[in-house]
Image (cartoon, rainbow, N blue to C red; front, top):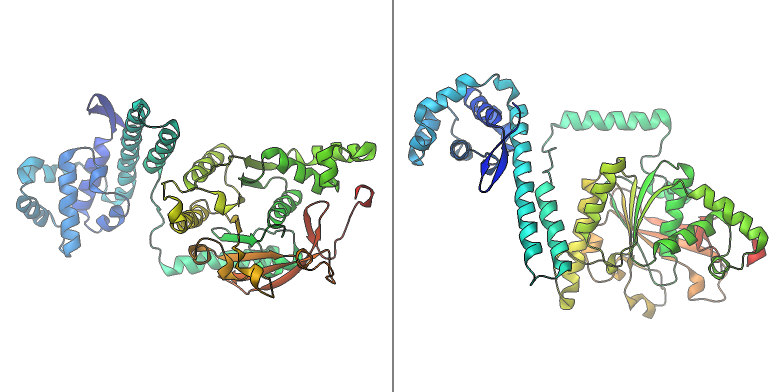
Length: 456
């Protein structure tokens, strides 16, 4: 059942006629197969028109709860006025007789789906070409439209569908048993002991929001988490979409953290001979890390998805995706300044979808509104999330950074900071205390204070 090409407009389109015939024949021979195959296919997935008519007849009967019996299908096609167009009852009989095995209905249907996806990609390519030739459309809109059309054409539907509960319990049992046997944390460890005890690490498919007012160290916490993970296991693969800092600034922060060199001294080039040795050593240590940095200042969920697909194709699954930060992102459609809440809601929903689609935790840094500045207790709460309540709704975990010394110069704990877990969909909330080293823009476990004082 190899794919073939048949005339389609002015071009040739992929078609697997044998697979289309076998899929329909399998359902006619074994009607119970329809429910399994229908989870994959729609009428438009069939290239041959009469096969679409037959599939439509199957769907109409199934929706009415009537049997997909040969005689009933013939009657339905007659009522639709399509019986003669498909070749009459004899063609249905031919489909049944020529089907190798009704047991393999799902296999046949996947072959049909494969060629249908190829045709959609070809159609998308034609649309992209027409868009590029339209000089009234800006180049930016052409590129955005191209990504949209290509992504829509290439996107495969979620094949998991419904599953029997015994399978779900069995798989979960195996997962818990493995954790107990190997002593593994259920999620990806952040490297912060108290935070990992609260969250159990960063879990796949979770959207984790990390919020804070300016100067509270939210980006520093995101970067500290990234490099904690990579130091523990350099083979982990992490994608960072940095809208606020460029790639060089990310490297500067990383080397500062690794070498214990003052960020300002690095920026000014005043690290001295001893500092240079540390710089060289740290650069060599972090260079092999599997960190992929996108430094575009304009970013949409569609672009994030497209880049992640490319990274997965090139090197396999990712372990963490970080976006810094949400309010600097743009939606894939123009909502206008007056509809910013709707735009952020769109971005939030799609970040959660990305977490599920790529089976990876998504850590998204976000800003907070100014309302907390008027309160006596300036620790953030969920309602402080800026621009949209949808952020709170979509997030599985919401973390806030709070450093008392920003508001209180005579605080008892000048180098300490709080990580407030204000929402935890699958676990407890609470507050943990970490050490914040300002000269390195780095968060540390409270019991792990290690500072190079020579460059402060």
